[in-house]
Image (cartoon, rainbow, N blue to C red; front, side, top):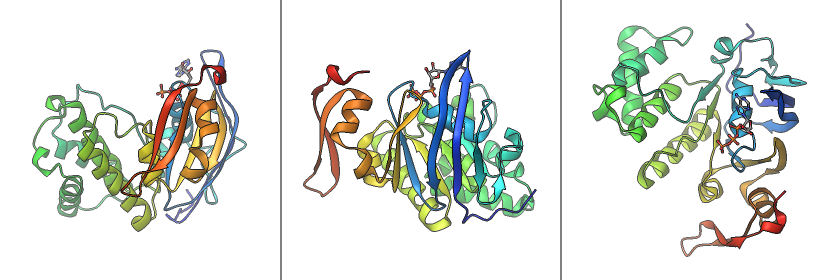
Length: 269
Ligand SMILES: Nc1ncnc2c1ncn2[C@@H]1O[C@H](COP(=O)(O)OP(=O)(O)OP(=O)(O)O)[C@@H](O)[C@H]1O
């Protein structure tokens, strides 16, 4: 396997996925996503966001004209091999796994090629739990945690691996407001300081406006818009994608917010 550095961009062109006899993604061209970027994947329910992340991770059968991390062609790799480069975190961890949080993160770390010796590994696991503010959960069992706590444990599993690309499917969904911002700040740090490409599905457009470097907006399995969050999260795009009448205004704190004034049924397609 060719060595890959964490400074490579992800290239995904002509991504097509069929599931259950239906075309879910049809020749989707994603602009190159650079290492070190926090990319928000946006779109209405059923628009193909999860399918796209799974296609990148090799978890659903997909065709691609190009799928590469830098010069490394990911297409011939099965999901297990791709996981060394791209780590997919589903929206919820299975609730029936009887491992402690520490053990679960350790298992993830040991699965990494060239895993660190045991004492370093234990230190690394403890550091990640600490960084996420869940050190107190280390000895708790996954099947005894709340959904939000389990989501943070899943994030620790994904982070400890330090892949080149993190693919996070709705990582904020079960989290309270404090943890949502905490996690976004951690992800921003992973992107900007450790040069990891973080692609995350978000339903909260304000979070995307506030934290993301780039945004991708999907509708009906196609890319409606790509660019900076301000370029993507615009009234005309929101009307077409979400059938809402909305505008973006700056709050008194200087953060942009989406203000919804109504539903735009006439835009619904
Ligand atoms: N295994 C499957 N078999 C058949 N169709 C599927 C399968 N998985 C997803 N789909 C369909 O693919 C489309 C895209 O689903 P996907 O989960 O990617 O959407 P999403 O944008 O992530 O939605 P949400 O915001 O609701 O999570 C939907 O119409 C869904 O019904």
